Length: 375
Image (cartoon, rainbow, N blue to C red):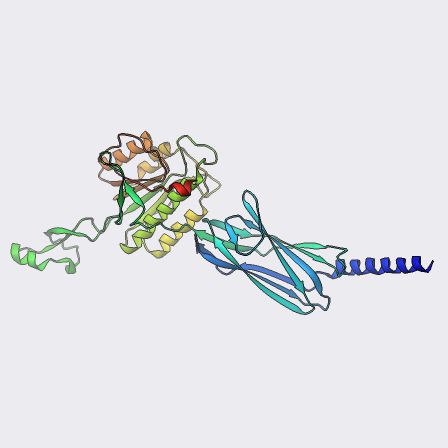
């Protein structure tokens, strides 16, 4: 009888202890989770910071935080579980009374995009492990990973129908201040452009003639289809990601020359499904804004690319036009030849294999494709 009473008392104490922890485990417990930066580039390593404070006398012998985020944020040193699009990272703490813990995770940004930490699940146990109450907290942590601009001096191959691809080791954008000769002075021009030796030789005010005028503008058009007639999720998404990095490279390259640039794509960032189109502007803030747009761009086309070129892209009239696409077809080549006939300098950049035969010799066509990235 005494043994039964002792057993009942033990069970009652265990039950009471479990109920006490169930009711008070998260009392005066604070949890924060945030990224060390609001934005980063592909390949950068940043930190995810966890701060846990136990402000009560009751200790928590075991506390688990279940972090759910994107698989494209790689947590160093963690035993994370990766599914198709998500990564689950467990984080364990032992919280003494009146105790605060700060943990820093090394996080590598594998891919461009906007990432959120909206919910973290906290699970605690009592001293005997008999109960496991849980709550969810909302840290609202946000990180924007920008596409890393490609090196414009390396990696591109200029396609020639007679001799095959030739690696390009120079800037693909023309220098707007490249001196090409002299011409007669226009009173609207600045006097510091006067070529005094030519002026003395001709007896007229002469100025430097640039290869391209200072009112040069660049439009970059991106194709988010990985192949022709693609209406669902892309079959080769990495080819589009390479195209996005190439676009970032062209836009970033305008910072050194001050060329106004604009970005267009057959993808939408709005619910109205309107294709992306920006105005022409220049400067670091403008290029940074375009990189943010590229970071958020979904891999889902709103219009077949050849049709998009004939409709939306027929209205723009820049001095330079760059088409970045994972494939080439007759519709793309016809559009490029038409715009070139209008006096626009056109460049085609293909980020996939299998170029068509008999490419027009009059077009500047480059290939930027890495087989290992497409695997």
